[in-house]
Amino acid sequence: MNYYCEYIDETLREKWEKVVKRNRAAGFHQSFEWAKFKNQEGWDTYKIGIFDKNTNEMVGGTIMMQFSFSNGTDFLYIPE
Image (cartoon, rainbow, N blue to C red; front, side, top):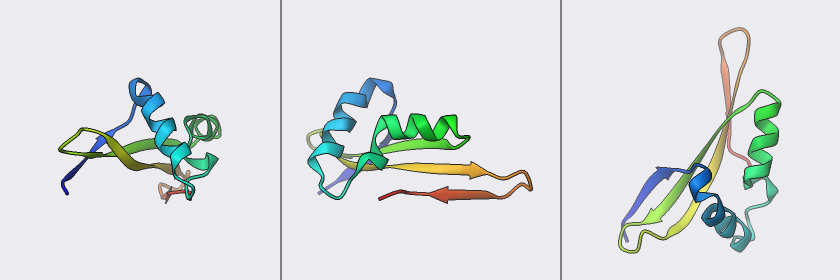
Protein backbone atom coordinates (compact mmCIF):
# COMPACT_ATOMS: atom_id res chain seq x y z
CA MET A 1 0.00 0.00 0.00
CA ASN A 2 1.29 3.40 -0.94
CA TYR A 3 0.08 6.58 0.65
CA TYR A 4 0.70 10.29 0.36
CA CYS A 5 -0.19 13.26 2.56
CA GLU A 6 -1.88 16.45 1.51
CA TYR A 7 -2.90 19.64 3.29
CA ILE A 8 -6.68 19.74 3.67
CA ASP A 9 -8.43 23.01 2.92
CA GLU A 10 -12.07 24.00 2.53
CA THR A 11 -12.30 22.32 -0.91
CA LEU A 12 -11.84 18.90 0.76
CA ARG A 13 -14.03 19.60 3.77
CA GLU A 14 -16.82 17.21 2.79
CA LYS A 15 -14.41 14.32 2.24
CA TRP A 16 -12.66 15.11 5.51
CA GLU A 17 -15.88 15.13 7.52
CA LYS A 18 -16.90 11.76 6.02
CA VAL A 19 -13.60 10.20 7.04
CA VAL A 20 -13.93 11.60 10.57
CA LYS A 21 -17.50 10.34 10.95
CA ARG A 22 -16.57 6.84 9.72
CA ASN A 23 -13.78 6.47 12.26
CA ARG A 24 -15.01 5.66 15.77
CA ALA A 25 -11.67 6.74 17.27
CA ALA A 26 -12.04 10.25 15.83
CA GLY A 27 -14.26 12.50 17.84
CA PHE A 28 -15.42 16.06 17.28
CA HIS A 29 -11.87 17.23 17.99
CA GLN A 30 -11.02 16.24 14.42
CA SER A 31 -13.82 18.28 12.83
CA PHE A 32 -13.52 21.48 10.81
CA GLU A 33 -15.77 23.20 13.34
CA TRP A 34 -13.45 22.33 16.24
CA ALA A 35 -10.47 23.65 14.26
CA LYS A 36 -12.37 26.86 13.59
CA PHE A 37 -13.17 27.21 17.31
CA LYS A 38 -9.52 26.65 18.25
CA ASN A 39 -8.44 29.25 15.66
CA GLN A 40 -10.67 31.76 17.44
CA GLU A 41 -8.87 30.90 20.69
CA GLY A 42 -5.49 31.71 19.14
CA TRP A 43 -4.38 28.29 17.94
CA ASP A 44 -3.07 27.62 14.44
CA THR A 45 -4.53 24.45 12.96
CA TYR A 46 -3.22 22.22 10.19
CA LYS A 47 -5.33 19.50 8.61
CA ILE A 48 -3.29 16.75 6.98
CA GLY A 49 -5.04 14.05 4.97
CA ILE A 50 -3.65 10.63 4.12
CA PHE A 51 -4.56 9.39 0.66
CA ASP A 52 -4.22 6.04 -1.11
CA LYS A 53 -1.91 6.58 -4.11
CA ASN A 54 -3.79 4.00 -6.19
CA THR A 55 -7.27 5.43 -5.76
CA ASN A 56 -6.61 8.99 -4.50
CA GLU A 57 -9.17 8.15 -1.79
CA MET A 58 -8.73 9.88 1.57
CA VAL A 59 -8.20 7.13 4.13
CA GLY A 60 -7.26 9.10 7.23
CA GLY A 61 -5.58 12.16 8.60
CA THR A 62 -5.32 14.45 11.57
CA ILE A 63 -5.73 18.00 12.72
CA MET A 64 -2.56 19.31 14.33
CA MET A 65 -2.85 22.35 16.54
CA GLN A 66 -0.10 24.78 17.44
CA PHE A 67 -0.17 27.40 20.16
CA SER A 68 2.60 29.99 20.25
CA PHE A 69 3.47 31.48 23.62
CA SER A 70 4.72 35.03 24.11
CA ASN A 71 8.13 33.71 25.24
CA GLY A 72 8.78 32.26 21.78
CA THR A 73 7.97 28.63 22.58
CA ASP A 74 5.30 26.59 20.86
CA PHE A 75 3.01 23.78 21.94
CA LEU A 76 1.99 21.27 19.25
CA TYR A 77 -1.05 19.11 19.99
CA ILE A 78 -2.84 16.37 18.08
CA PRO A 79 -6.23 15.62 19.71
CA GLU A 80 -7.77 12.14 19.76
